[in-house]
Image (cartoon, rainbow, N blue to C red):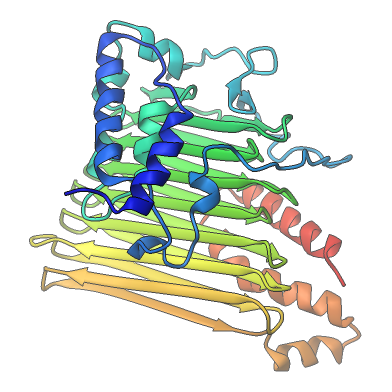
Length: 430
């Protein structure tokens, strides 16, 4: 079936500005397959069902929009104090000089470009595979584009319990940069690893991360997106979980023009756990933040949690689209989903589309979505005890976000992110 003209023209224009990266024969074949899939489905337009709350035009445009390089001043980078293996990308290009030695016990790590150039590499069995599986039943065209055209990234194979986190830091130095990165993480049976990510990355950023967690493995993920930055970003996080495995991901987002985070998780082994959470702070009419999550239960006694909180002011817009799909035979499923918006004025918007689709009869699944303003009773209580209105509002805002932040298991990292959220609120006081 031919694509609608608007979609076909947009796709053709975007592809004309890109070139398939070179690599080994198997890598070229995988990239060409992705290109064929993208040509068939086309890039998204506003009329598409899963894009009706978010306009993808600036993400589809052939040229990246301009985004000023933001100066963080004296503020230290997030996770700077963590004892971590550091990997640095500057406008989407790996920077070896600023990165750590990529050797660590229990961990195999390499640049994507090196892995895709090797005739034999473990990444051959994973690259693009989880992304491809995640296209059903909902198409995710930007992830397909990424699989075809990603120019850099990191591939990680955890073979044991990795004590030091892997910290990927993204730096933005070119106001017209257009970065496409693809990471692949393989957690072997019984192994565990923590991945930290932070930084503005580029003027326009397309990133896909594929995570395969084997039986009894564990993957922990914390990322912080930008701060007071004009970025436009679309990310895809695709995960597959084995028996008794664990996957936990938390994202903090502050400002930016457009952010679309897509998370697609499939629980394929019994007794697996998947937690996805996010805390978002948005200020201004140019701010638009979209979390789109799809979790599939395809095994027994699995647990999933989706906890998303968005604080919006001065005309900012927040979007949440979350779905739990329980397949036939996935008995004893425990699925929980909550999305809430806190509007600090009458001009901001929170748009939510929570969904449950259940084909098993012995499950405990729930979803809820609310939107509202600051609790006037709580605000009055704090003010009656000498707390100023702005300080009281900030305290209540942090309390609102606390349920999402609580999904972080590492107390030190949770405290650091809470401090950054508090600092953002203080800078933004009217």
